[in-house]
Length: 145
Image (cartoon, rainbow, N blue to C red; front, side):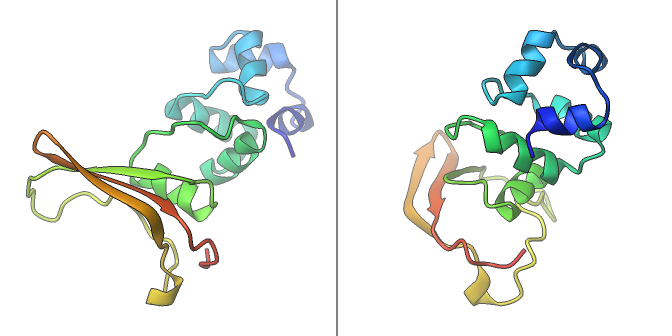
């Protein structure tokens, strides 16, 4: 179901929902049609207002969105997109710093055995300054969520 249909099923007019989100009606329509990508904080605000989890919002948004969207985010966003098989290319920056326990790049994916792991193809590592950049395309989309 499209975001527009979900919004309408909640009895939000385009004007009322756009106003509540701090958008113009044109901006909201462009988001609903996949022509504009909402910032993550707006996507979460829209999901909450529509009674959707971030994962469900992402799934409905990407039904209409341009498949060449760049999404930047932390572990929660990366995990959500990987779980919903919405990633065709992943880029992760690794900094040469140790901060103890560290910060998760990806959260729980429900992978219980190595054979269920997400595998990558067309892998590239590049050095950018002191950082290491990993790029890869997921090829094993049969893992369980």
